[in-house]
Image 1 (cartoon, rainbow, N blue to C red):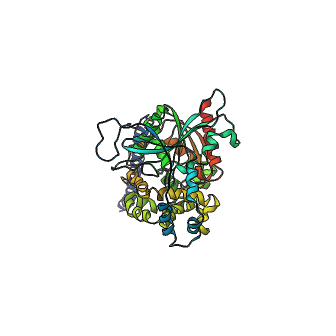
Image 2 (cartoon, rainbow, N blue to C red):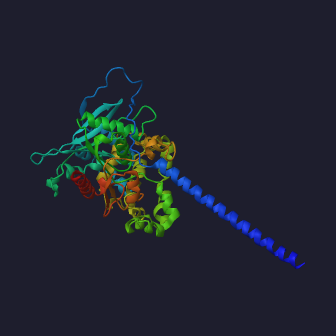
Image 3 (tube, rainbow, N blue to C red):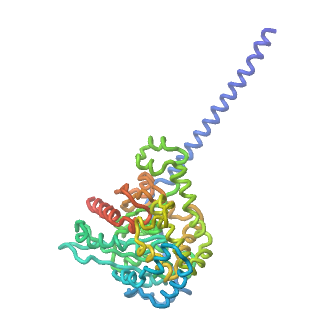
Length: 460
C-alpha cells in the first residue's frame, strides 16, 4: 500500500519534468531558428558592391524617332503676359485672406520673373523630354584653380528656385564672407513634370529614370566627374545616380535620407536600449517620445502622400484650376515641414523663415506652368508599387557621402542608419536649426556643410 502511494506521488513529478524538458527543447528550437534567420539575413544583406543598370528610355510622345536626338543646349527665358496675370487676379479676387490679399494686391510677378532670370536658364532634349536647368558659373576664381561641378536637385513641392539663395554662397564664396578654397559651378535642373521641364508622355518615369536623365545632362555639359546634392526627391534621385554611375560621382551630399525600416526597431527596443547600443543623446531627443516624434508625426503629415501615390490626377485637376487651392496645398507644407510648432501659429508661421515673395514665386512656378498634377505623379511612379518594391531600395551606396541632419526634418535619421545604407559616410552633422527645405530656409548652414564635406573628402 505504502509502495503504491509513494509511486502515485512520483507521476506528477515525472510529468512536470517532461513538461520542463519540452519547454527547454521549444526554447532551444526558437533560439536556433533565430540564429539561422540571422545567418541567412547576414548572408543575403552583407556588403555587395552593386550598381544600378544605366539603361535608356524615351519619354516623349510617340515612338522613339530613328533620327539622332537633338542634343543642342538652348538658352531659355522665363516669360509672362497680361492675360496670365489678369486671369490670376480674377481668381484670387474671390477670396479675402492675408496671404491671398498680399498675392493679389502687392505681389509683383513681373519683378519675380526678373529675379528668376538673374541666373542663366537652358533647355535640352534628353530621352524625348525638354529638360530645363539653370547653370551658374563662378564670377571669379582664385588663380590656377577650377570650379567644382555640383548638381543640386530639388523635391516636392519645391523647385529649382529653392537654391537661389545658396548659389552665390557656393559660386562666389569670397564675396559672401567665406573662403575661396572651394568654389563651385552649380547646375540645378527641374525634375521632369516640374516647372519648365517637360512631363513624361508615358508611365514609368521614376527617380531612377530621372537620375539617368540628369547624368546624361552632366555629360552633355562636359562633366565626367561631379558632386551631387539633394533633399526630398532630390535625395533619392542623387542616391540612384550614385548607385548607377558611382565612378562619375565624386561625392554625394544629402539633407534627407529615405530610410524607414529602422523605425520599427526604435518602437520595439525603446529609448533605454538604444542608448546602450551607442545612439547619441541628440538622436534620442529627436526620436523620442516615439509616439509624438514619429508615429503621430507620420499620421499628421502623410495624408497627401497617400493621395499622390494612388490618385494624383484627382486632386491635381482641382489644384490646376484654383490658384487659392494650389497655394493652400503647397504653403501648408512650407509651414509644418519647416517647424511642426508653426502649425498653430497665425498663417502657419510662414513669415518666420520665408518671405511671401519667395513662397509665392515657388507657387507661381507650379501655377503658370500647370505642373502640379504631373509633379504629383512622381509619387505614384516611385511609391505606387509598395514599400521596398524597387531594387535600389535594397542596394547600398558606395560613394563618399556627407549628411546634414536638420532638427525639424520630417523624420530624423541617426548616423548609424545612414552609414548602414551609405557605408562610405565621411561626414554627419547635427545642424543647429532648420527643417525640410534646407537650401531655401537655411542656405548659409547648408552651404557650410557642403563645403565641410568636400573639404574632408579632398583631404583623403
